Amino acid sequence: MAVIVDVFPARQDNYGYLIHDEATGRTAALDAPDAAAIRAALRMRSWTLSDIFITHHHLDHVEGIGELKAAFGCRVVGPRDEADKIDGLDELVGDGDRVMLGETTFDIIATPGHTLGHIVYHDPKGGHLFSADALFSLGVGRMFEGTPGPMWAGLERLRALPDETLVYCGHEYTESNAKFALSVDPDNTVLQARAAEVRALRVAGKPTIPFALGEDKQANPFLRADAPEVARHYGLEGHPAADVFAATRKGKDNF
Ligand code: ZN
Ligand code: FE
Image (tube, rainbow, N blue to C red; front, side, top):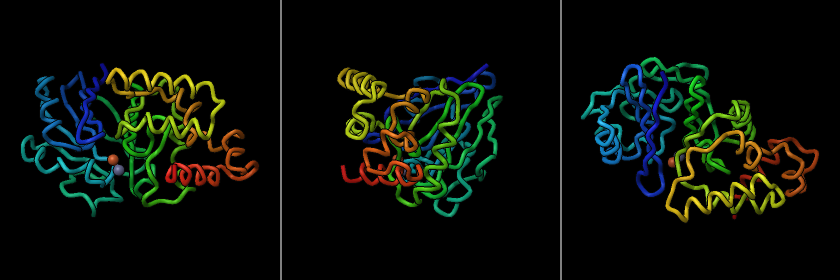
């Protein structure tokens, strides 16, 4: 058996996710953006919360922990490197660790940059990646705490996951990401097609999440820092990919 993923909007532009292990009925909230939205999603599915998996310390990912823990007595797993910044963690994990949700195994991958201790949760068997603010559709999180080298290295590890992987990220930023991506890499036909699809989804009021990692590898300029087209855009041909990544991140900040 596998997991069922329930996707719902939370706060302004966050996504909330419930991950339900079919074999055991255990249900995890991926981050805790908004206790009320998570409780409503649980009621709709008639699930009860057993776990919370936290990715990083930002308020829009942890604010609901206290209320949910009080209501459900759930286990809260989170990044060891940010334990001092997050209240209510029961279990601390870091790169290479594994977390079980019933019969489903999640591999923890460190993705420093947006925050220094940011982690993502990967279900290799089901092909799900919960990337929070490390990797968005056609973009990446703002580099608040990290430096380009380690941030690029973390993204390279996500890029090495199978193409069929479905990515569930922390925010609905895809449309603005697409505009920036097209400014960097205008002749990329995979990107053009994805941008058109995203526009249609948003016009119809639909989420652009989850997205296929394989397509994002070809369309997301932040995953293409070693592609000559992206390097050329910044006049950095022949430079290390981390330098191109840094220029792209800076370009997006000022876009
Ligand atoms: Zn964040
Ligand atoms: Fe966020």
